[in-house]
Length: 176
Image (cartoon, rainbow, N blue to C red; front, side, top):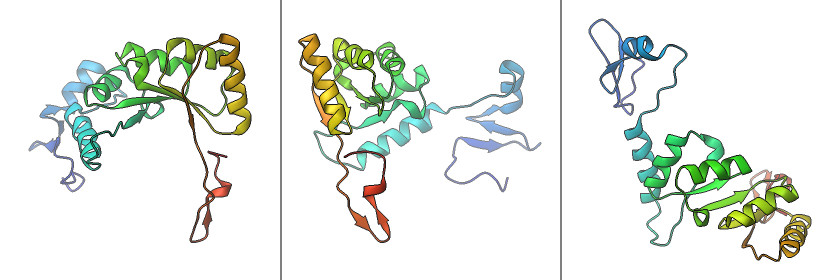
């Protein structure tokens, strides 16, 4: 019982010391699904997504979920239902987003190493934007979309070289 933290209200323990997740015994889950088993609690996921959105009371806010955090199709569907858009880092994740019923306009393609084929696919699908991290990448995306004769919205990630204490943003990977 000492391991059950108050914030994990979906966990409980019976008199025999058996752990329950949303009132379902882990022993029963083990019998039904085997082990190892990853248990995701939908109500907890939805609650956290809602709390995040509510922390930013800006009507035009379009929060994005990073698909690479957990690309499980059911999780992506929950994320979409809770009003989030999708930040993807591969063609495979674009496809997962579409399978989870995100519209292309709800998907942003952010990847440090985009191939010409990746850029073409994202542009053809009609993603909301492709994120660029350097001047070279802006030129490459421009060349590809010019070759395709297709405009694409570009997001530019900038590293402002901010110093905070002994930390300097200039040494970080993302942005120019």
